[in-house]
Amino acid sequence: MVKEFTWSEEYSVGIDEIDEQHKALFTLINRLYHAMIHVNLNKKGSAVCGDILDELADYTRIHFLLEQTLMRIGGYPEYEAHCELHKNLVNEIDALQEKIASGKAAISFELLQFLRNWLTKHILDEDMKYGMYFKKHGQSQKRNVNEWTKRSRDAISKHKKKSKWWKFW
Image (cartoon, rainbow, N blue to C red; front, top):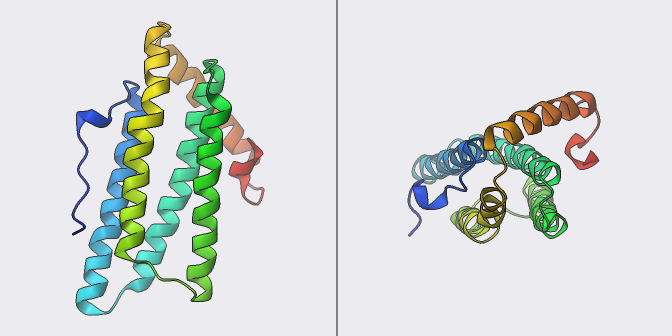
């Protein structure tokens, strides 16, 4: 049975900004979970679920963009492979959103379970690798995150008006 998604230190990659973003993803998945329970109990509010899923998709894209910027700035050797994993999930989410919008699919607990499993597996298997890389190479978390945050915000601002602006990266 699907239940609330709980953050633990097991998911910490050792980079405060990334950990905070991962916590935000957990929170969005939990909001979707609670909205789905409400919809199932009251048969109302499916639009709320759609809005939360859209917010989760948008936040995931932003998070991936920022994460990839950090990896690129830090010279992470598995950058390309990691980006490909991000691209694949974004493509799956795009396809799912199109199916939901056209009525060919619905937001379900199976979808919720998929998102939770993907996120935990991705953090534990893939994100931990770059966390260890940065720690091993003694790169200052504060310096990298400050540079990364500034460059990412500048890039987002510059490309915000474009359709699907997160794809410029």
